Image (cartoon, helix red, strand yellow):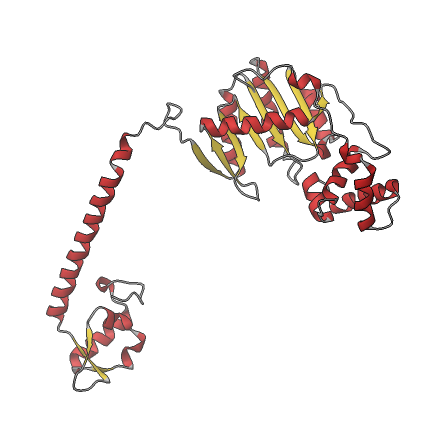
Length: 345
């Protein structure tokens, strides 16, 4: 049957029922009259009159009911057959040993809303005893509401009190942020922070067993990941970024300028020669566009450039991008313990 209507034969619309009753009483109706109720033709309740093609004759209610009941029974039989086929296809999968945490917790869960996300992080932190790893990029929501800052500060301190450690990687834009520095002045224990010009989206890894990452641009959705392979992959990403980052706390290391070009300007220069716009550069480095343009102007002045095209050429000739930041010597002392620690939620 055609599916031009939103209902089945068991619930004819008022217009269709009215026209069917009229056809039964009058013996037929015009084809035009049935134009607004195609369900009657689709269900076979109205059929063309062989003698008068422009008119439609009704099927007797007893015959219509019998036919529709038969079609319903056939449809039910088809659905049951499909159920049997699906059950047979999935039956072998029921015996596959799928690893989990032993508590029936899903390996990947979608969390919706700030309250639920923070609750999930707090629960994971409550069971943590080793390490918290976190990547905190600069976003408009970096300065969170006081209740969220207080909650994350409390759960971080609880981990430190249990002998755990916290390592956090911030975007360089936050290197001198008062709220970030004040946070570390309040924490007591093994905490360390570094900065990098470009980082990933927010990442939290608790005891290397559970990770949290954003699942949407508005930050209102997050994934809670307990799949061991994925968590290990995320830890590896963190460690590689960490080895490239500049220490910020407990001892700050200042990256030196090179030929009058600051580290921030070198990061901008690298993106400029890749052909990125001011807006993209600002987003990648956690800056607003105005600040990015100020840095670009200073870089142009330092290199003696009069135009954007010339600036790209002078960056290449200056050699400032050939200067590689040496990894922090302490970062390669030893790989983090098999069981690690956590960070700000």
